[in-house]
Image 1 (cartoon, rainbow, N blue to C red):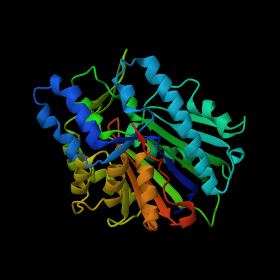
Image 2 (cartoon, rainbow, N blue to C red):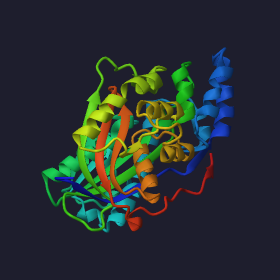
Image 3 (cartoon, helix red, strand yellow):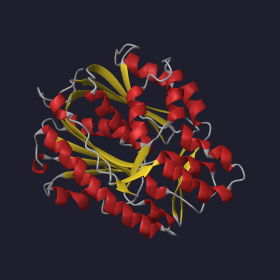
Length: 366
């Protein structure tokens, strides 16, 4: 791929508190059961979500409190900074670089508000230089992993030789709401977890790069603002998630994927690395792309072990795919608020020492 950028290091991180799906399902039954006359039907989402375990920055008992913006924001700032430092350091270590080598840092996060932004808070603790350029981005939601890699690669191309650190962090569990009686809240309780990912990029040839990053594209469907996003009130963020999402993906995603692959001269058999929004969305993607049911194996593996962490999840899938030998042309894909599809072409090198086994914390009883 012409004008490509080297992906020098890739890492992922999750917080310490494990949320076992069976336990969360039982707790949700106690919380939401009295609020829904049809909860026995909604209860099935926990069984059918394809998730065994997720991770959270706070133990499960914390969520039983009457939480407001102040408490949620304090938890976000604390948890996000810790994950920023862990993911950023691991990515730099794998790239063979130090925090002092970073010239530009891009932060992607939509599950909390931080001003000063996260990299201003965590950067000095990580060891970033005081003249490091900062680019915080809010509002991309689940598309943020792919869109963030695309933005970071554009910045690298704009200043060849400069080292760009991308950190993608989402703490979805902090948006858990006990005070609302919506189906979307029950689904969110069954799907979402916390996590972070980081990548180091440079517009410079490298024999040890994880991959080369090529062109990017986005597709925004008109009149789809109500499919996915946040509502905001004095208690916190509230998830907006349309029940029409899987059907929409099944019917509408195929064309923009084909357009992107054709524009990049990539064949229909090109390996796709997708954001796994949930089991129903994965099934819809497979139908839209004409793939056999269950073929998105790495996506299901990540979903089962970590849940939907929003933006960083696709980077977990990329890491999983690389550990299983991903090599050659591939395309990353994620869907997010807007309603938007984000795409990115890569050429994977499958350098084993740059994508070592993912380290997960020893589960702490939540």
